[in-house]
Length: 167
Image 1: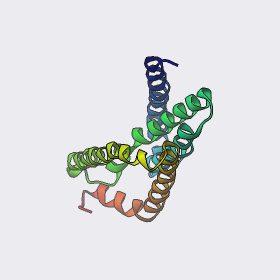
Image 2: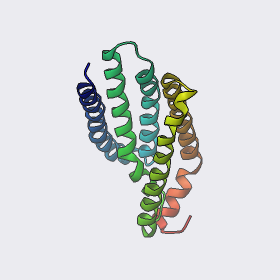
Image 3: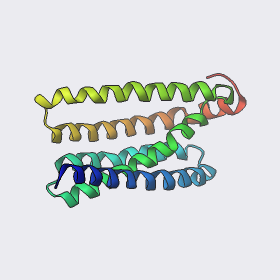
Image 4: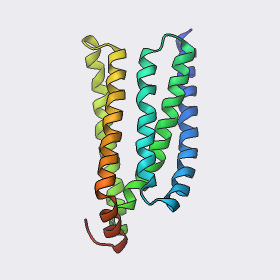
């Protein structure tokens, strides 16, 4: 496949999945929040868990078709997580600090993405397949920590936020 076609294909399948995940994730987050207050946190964790095998498969698939399915699945998981990331954080932050919380989350996102560019330095000693497997494992760890943290602190933090008290 020519390089230009490969780039367009990779972009289309990943972004198509992401758009679907964003729309469905936003709708699910808003609806499920009415049934269970921590639902948005669970959806972020679900998105991460969906991303985990998908990112592994992106780097370890033997066929283009399998890679496309994996990239689409990764996009859906990423969209599901992203659609609920900021809203979930605002569930546990007093309204008076919402802008600060969003600013900090954006700052952290920028800092973490900067480390991603450094991963290229690893490719001399670590294969792409191994890096994607590691990334999948990190998604599982992050989802697990999110679930544990939500179970442990959500109720108290959400109550403080609703009352407008500082955390």
